[in-house]
Image (cartoon, rainbow, N blue to C red; front, side, top):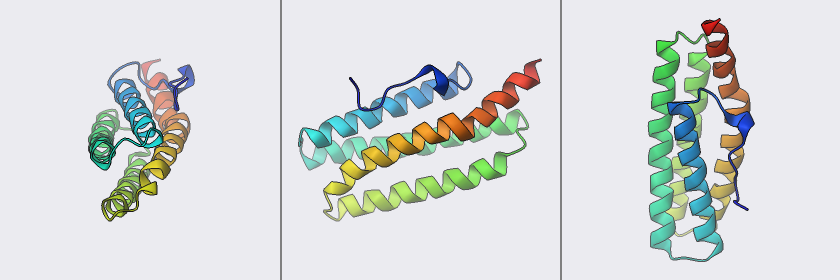
Length: 134
């Protein structure tokens, strides 16, 4: 069983956003596996950097889709996204400073944030897009 499993209730658009979310889930699982297996700093550091980069890229794509759809709560999402990326960057800096336990903590932070963000905040977008189609 994976550390973080994709679930049907996480589906937002059946397309690009979901593909991004699934990739992030995969990266969280890779980070968790690497940290629990004690695989070197280089492996964990690389996965961590990929995760942070991909998260930032995903959030930009998500915001672009929200803007294109004229999603009314875009500003709220942008603020939440910016705060999350800043938190990830701080955690990465702590890891690079030698605080090895940060990587394991980050697995939990990412899993919990992604799960809640998708199931709550992004569901707003899901409902908006669904109602727009009708």
